Length: 307
Image (cartoon, rainbow, N blue to C red; front, top):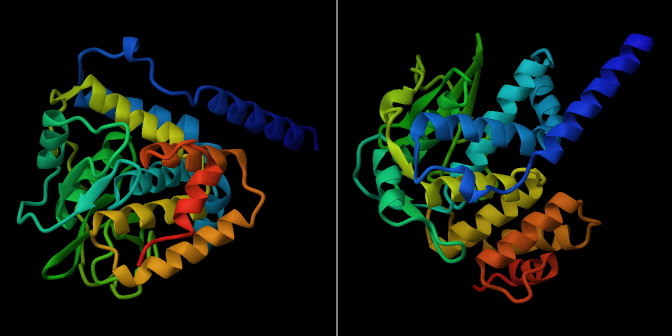
């Protein structure tokens, strides 16, 4: 009993420290250009400090569903993979928009676009990329945070998603866009695709974008701060915000999903929201340019998705 109590206290202290360090970026601490290697390490630390406590319950459920032992290492990997999925996906907090670009399966063009035009605090999409580019962005950053086994997956000859071979015989499909999928399909839930369609998932190389690639200070701060602002929120809140963005972009989410987004937003409005969800909604109100930028203002917009 004493040992169990000590472990519980240790976890609580660690989570408290993580929450305390989940803060926005002090620009004075960043060089004018941040090397990609350093940004990957900073993202790893920001994800772990901001998302670990929030993702623990769904991480435990995820591991149990796949009959995997619930360990701190596996929960850490799940937190990294799931958080970067939410950030990079079409309509996610990094505001990447899907469109046909006819580019290769690399993240280089996304980073080049961000370097030319740093994402604004408010407004529309920050970059445009096709399914293979978005999946490459996601998989490359997962590799940079230290989690292994994520690569590109071709469920059809003309479409790319990501996949995670988390353990022998356990493959998780990770669709970074909604192409060929239903409105609510998401991480580890893409029934239209067979996980055995591709025999081998080759781990995506971190070298896709070299270590020394310079990332402008404003871009690095944007990416890190969007993790701070959104990663602690519930998956339900993140899903509604992502879908609303994607609909606004006219990207990979079908226009037929509009009513479902409004319905899910009404469900959120009827709850007693956690502080992290209220903070994410208020941040989204800022993105939309609403005044006042409050959770209530964001919910009012979300529940009245135009037809």
